[in-house]
Length: 339
Image 1 (cartoon, rainbow, N blue to C red):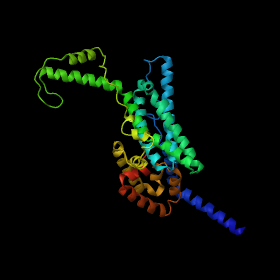
Image 2: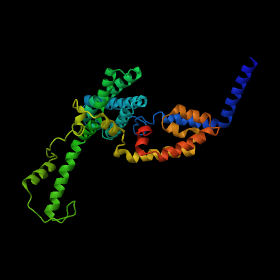
Image 3: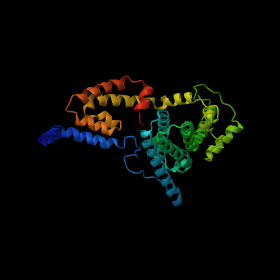
């Protein structure tokens, strides 16, 4: 009984010592933990709901646009939460690639709310299906079963989601289609005017005046009346390049998985930035677990902060700082990058 009381008193003294001498550090660590809660979650502007200017739409359309955007954000965050629990690295990397495009589309819709309704297929179909399939995959992982049927089902889910990054991009392109056609029509008229004036075109070549062709005249007339020239429907990227993944008996999973594990070139700059931030935090503030909070690993960060009075967190964080700095880009993307 005496020994138990002694251990209890020593424990209380240790807690009081840590709070008294490192209270400010621990408070800062807790604050970082709270800030990191929404680190990988979609942020709206200054943290407030976007003030959509939907006056050009009917009351019914305004309600639909707001509902679609709320659903898009909720589904995005739900996929992020599930991605943290996935054990399948290949699928996790593929979801990360999809989320990069989804995040950029959401930011575009926030700044261009009139485009929310045209993005309905992305919200109600592709992202919704991606969330449903990811949930089902996670449920299968939780069972721990590795029977032939379970493996086959998980493989089908993985194969289907391997095509979704291009589907996301195709839907984003469709949302931009009106803007792209307007730009093309304007560029066509501008180029024709340059030709007519004998000025330089965009390639820098001097062009002698030429008669205006019937097609160019039609383009100019269409542009003047704000009626963009009809162009062929953009080719759906989701139907190219990865079509073989949807053909039974022609699936090469090794190549598909290898591709999904590589870092997309579109996010190279962001990954480099994350490497620098993680390495810097680990080297300078690693003693209190700043880099762990930044990564969203709140529990590990708290452990670093609690034991910051020892030398162990400092030594470990220095090793981690070096590791982050020299780690290959693809490996860092797979293990630590968050959009």
